[in-house]
Amino acid sequence: MTKQLLLADLETAATMESIEQIRIKYLGRKGLITNLAKETDFSKFSQEEKKSFGQKLNELKIFATEQIEKAFERVKDLESGAVKMVRLVDLTVPGSVRSLGSMHPITMVQLELEQIFEGMGFAVLDSPEIETEFNNFEAINIPKDHPARDMQDTFWLKNDLVLRTHTSANQVRTLLRFGVPVRAIFPGRCFRYESIDPSHENTFYQSEGLMVDENVSVANLIGVMKTLLSEIFRRDVKVRLRPGFFPFVEPGFELDLNCMFCGGVGCSTCGDGWIELIPCGLVHPSVLEFGGIDPKRYSGFAFGLGLTRLAMMRFGIRDIRHFNSGDVRFYEQFAPIL
Ligand code: DAH
Image (cartoon, rainbow, N blue to C red):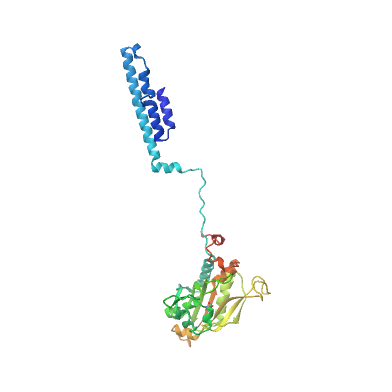
């Protein structure tokens, strides 16, 4: 009987403390088992009976001591670190949801652009964000006193290097490095000293394109631009060239895209039916010379595509400040990386 009571008590005990209480309850000085001997009147017992009682009492004490010892061991394990951790895991709690990252919209447009140009045999080049003043300005026909410098004020570093104002800064480096014929695009980040508003940023992305070979003409430029835009906007597009001035091309153009919102009749996005999209032109002879190329034998075209601008048009983003905001709610709206 006492054995059953003891086992039942031990079964529910989960701490060292509560087992110690049980030990006292049964084996302590006034414990239930200890008292058995005290409360029994041995005077009526025969010698045999006394012996057998003594033996049974001893057995009971040994049994109780062993069981209590075992219980101590079990709880000691439970209270040690590893087992405690296991006890803390509640398998009925729903799992935690991990959100997937998404690609930055400019990266998406850039990757698409790279794929299209690779399909036309262009190399995709890396280019430095920190440039020499020479590469960013002089080498592409923007000498110190040229008014174009005002439009492209930038961040000057203490060692006379600049944060490049445009990817055009990599044109001459590319010519010197690869010679002719060359076909390459170089997408990347550019910087200008600019006050920020919904359509101006001091940090933005462009992609330069450059093709130089024998007999490259405006017809090649238009062909490449039309292929690019048809693929990006997934339809046959109409483009037009207007004269535009850039010191590093001659002739220079503004390439306009026939507005895909109104079909060219005029709307609030485009105004007169055309969207000004890609400045471009035939590479100026003196730029070719800076690149070690003979302008009498070779010609080429260059363009400077605003990647940030393209991403805004592609995704209908109206405020340029979203791109560098670090606001996850903005980024989450784009396709997750799977
Ligand atoms: N670099 C010019 C800018 O950022 C854009 C540009 C115009 C690039 C004409 C070109 C070009 O390659 O031919 O404003």
